[in-house]
Length: 217
Image 1 (cartoon, rainbow, N blue to C red):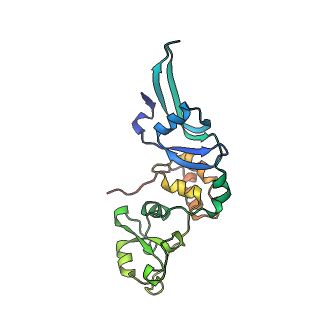
Image 2 (cartoon, rainbow, N blue to C red; image 1 turned 60 degrees about the vertical axis):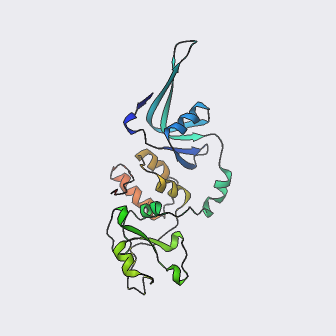
Image 3 (cartoon, helix red, strand yellow; image 1 turned 45 degrees about the vertical axis):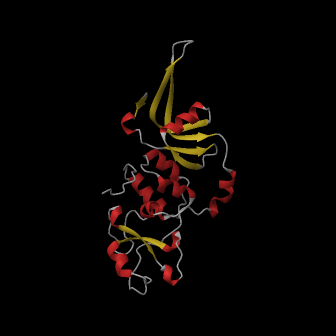
């Protein structure tokens, strides 16, 4: 039986290692398994839900596990800690569009996901690579107009410089719905020089809930 935020059972839990390094998003089932296996070193954030189990034959008490929004599990990710500065996350449209806040980086208009495309700034046909620093979110109209040209060749200008997300930024970009306390936690791991840091800090300052809105059809 699930209590607490039972109406929002899909809310993800942020898992970190014992040193506090963000690792991944997990669902409530995986979180309960980690609590039950005594793999949770500590937790923080807000209480999301309480999961009730069976009754003890010895004392009649019912088992219960309280799941918080952020849980740290035993062990450290030493390889990640060593290589995080070199980490390059996999590129996909969902995280790309979220990196660019669903804005076309050419016309500066915000669009539903279905109307966005991945544009190669230096086209593949001209030797460009399918990499974070060479891709931009573009509406279909701008992408079609640009075609196989570079922005300079098409007399178009980017409104922002594309960047490759850090590991912590990628964790945020993968989140379906990021709670305020989870965002505050992730923000501490995002470089201050990052455009994403400034954007999310402004949202937190405004007191707005950080929710991944994908402008679904």
